[in-house]
Amino acid sequence: MPGKPMLTNHKYIAFETILIKEIRRFTRIWLQTLVPPAITIGLYFLIFGNLIGGRIGQMGGFDYVDFIVPGLIMMAVIQNAYANVSSSFFSNKFQRCIEEILVSPVPNYIILLGFVAGGMARGVAVGLIVTAMSFFFTSLHIEHVFLTLLVVLLTSMVFSLAGFINALYANTFDDISIIPTFVLTPLIYLGGVFYSIELLPTFGQWISALNPVLYMVNTFRYGILGTSDVNILWALFMLGVFSAGLFGVALYLLRKGTGLRQ
Image 1 (cartoon, rainbow, N blue to C red):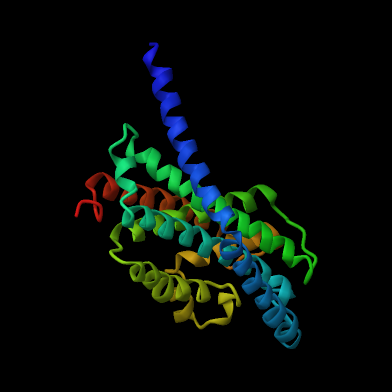
Image 2: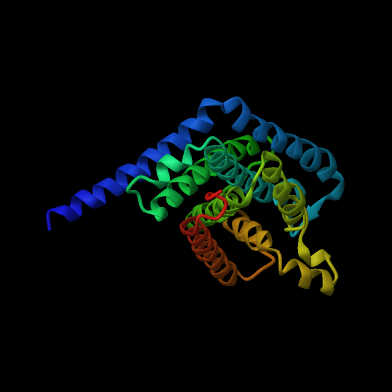
């Protein structure tokens, strides 16, 4: 049917437009979006990796600095993917720009995919910057390239979706910082970034198993170092469940108009 390709092309143009807008948004202010995360993670490398790491010795059979590199890269991806979508979508909502998108003949899932893809782009960009910086402190080679890329994409998707949901519920800019401060930061620091959960008592390991970041960090660590504290297939399954579940929740809330019809 002649109308079908036109509709498909219309959706693609809408998705591409939102994605390009999001990428231009964080690249235009790169001194605020790309440089600070790189400096922060660089300090982690210097302090925890070189200075303290030399006293710790080995962790999980690797030099401490090598052990924490995957976790620090993943931490940068998580924080920036989340921050990009939560701040961008809420800014559009606060300035009433989102209403122009919502009344346009663009499906809700295209709007969601556009913002999420923009968050993923920033998360991956910062991850690449941090990865490049890590070679100044350690020499790593990736054991499983495809798995490493897959985990980065899935993780950035999960937290981009989480940032989108946060932006829907947020009523003020202060609400944007509540979740990263009181939820995201504890999950990251207790997700095996700086230590192996094998050091924890049995009860602590059971509690850690409830932390989704644990699966992301360890699967990424397995992709780079070839070692993990969790079952890789189970971790990938959990990542898939988180991605699908959050996408469904975000799409439902967007269709319902949560936080948008006021």
